[in-house]
Image (cartoon, rainbow, N blue to C red):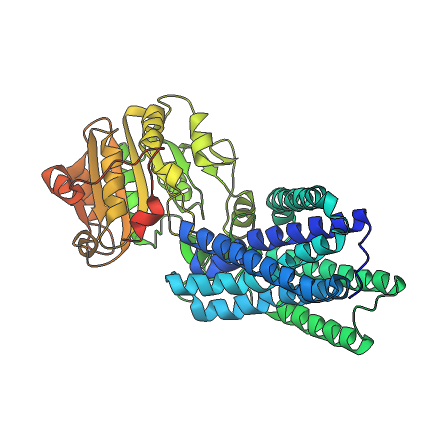
Length: 498
């Protein structure tokens, strides 16, 4: 068989750079596509990364096999076009499949991750060995050729990672990124085919190319028409606002398929969710009734608690640290958020923002930051709790919302962590959750001074449903021998898995 002529070095390098970069774009966007259905946890991230690596491994293997059996110049353009089709159909696969696989079970997570990334990444991974085969005309330059192409493939992946994380995700919805990538792959494939035909090599019959184009258009159309769970896609969340059918002024903020906040536009004192009622009870007992508070909120969400503090304690000075600027804009448009001198918002990470706050500045710190249903690990450590203690006044109170499920390994560890910093700690939770019968929200309360537990118990009795308040020996028994979480050891996702 006649040895295929190599591609121009610039074209070969560009193909490897582009194919490798496209795989990383798909991998990053896949995390955002599956998040609304199965959450954004370490297991989900691991699944997407693992599936991507498997696709690269199998695609590279198959590409190498095909390169030895066929003229690689005949395969390059079809590989790009098929990759475009595979990219376009990920949207309908994930969005219709996600409705069926919704939840966090491991098989569902793996299957949805495969739908989001495997096929296009598998096809794109085959391009590099095809190009390498073409360029190995002189065995004396094998190391030089392989090294150069490997280097540019890695550079393509790095460029795509940074570009997607810093630019594309902030500027475009995930669906637009996917469909744009599919379009670029398709144009590149047909353009490469035209170039190779001019070089006397025909990469495919016109009828075959037309059929591929038709399939690609159908895939793109299905992707554009696939149901989306988002009203707004921010840099961090798939967000939706649902209207309460029972209350005209009621709104529920949905983030990545989870009911995150409830806001009553007409009555900020209407706390619908049980855990916000408990946080309200803590707020009511920090200082005498109607006395203004200085409050720091780690996580804004729907700004339910800042609105409650402002309504029940006029003149309070509040600072909110919220990671997602797009969410703040959505709250301003849809949930009545009004910022000003007495309610300030800092967009950024809660740990970083906390470090910039003054010592002994606050009467109350509320921790309510979540990545889906999980407290970010770096906000759950002893070092984080120590910095919270630093910004609290001597008689100030820290109230932290967490979610856990039987056997409650995470909330026990987080209680041990908070107790390692605050000498006075209590736990608010439903009785069934404390018995390990069901998953639930838990509110951990800590202070450097004795807590007003009797007053807090009276305030909790006004909540819609019965709730337990543990402290002292009862709390010690609940915590048991749980390990304190630190910046060096905080396996939050694993603890939540039970």
